[in-house]
Length: 139
Image (tube, rainbow, N blue to C red):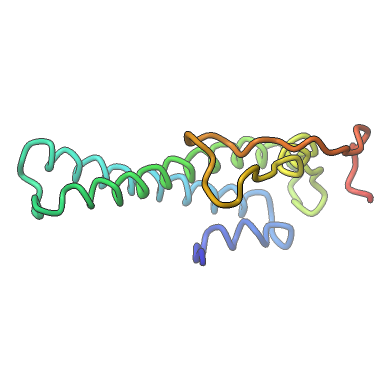
């Protein structure tokens, strides 16, 4: 389960203003920066041999990787969202969706549900037909 108040504010952006959405996204960007500053400081303390739980360093490294990758993902998303939202009209409910990105999401498929894909990249895309002329919000 994901609980993230600022993301919820973005989710309901069509009931506010573009400024409201951009402020929520800026808060998310700051959150990601702060988390990674903490992650970097902790990692550096372990590299120097000064980490508070040296016997747990192997496990903490795995968990630290998750936290760092998660904060990186949130930062990348927030940067994309800020750039996208910046082009919106003052009332987000009148904004046009990013149909190209929506198509990219729709094409994703999990090849082998029993194991994660190798590497840390996006899931492979499936070969499915999507309308190529999708340019408006109407179905």
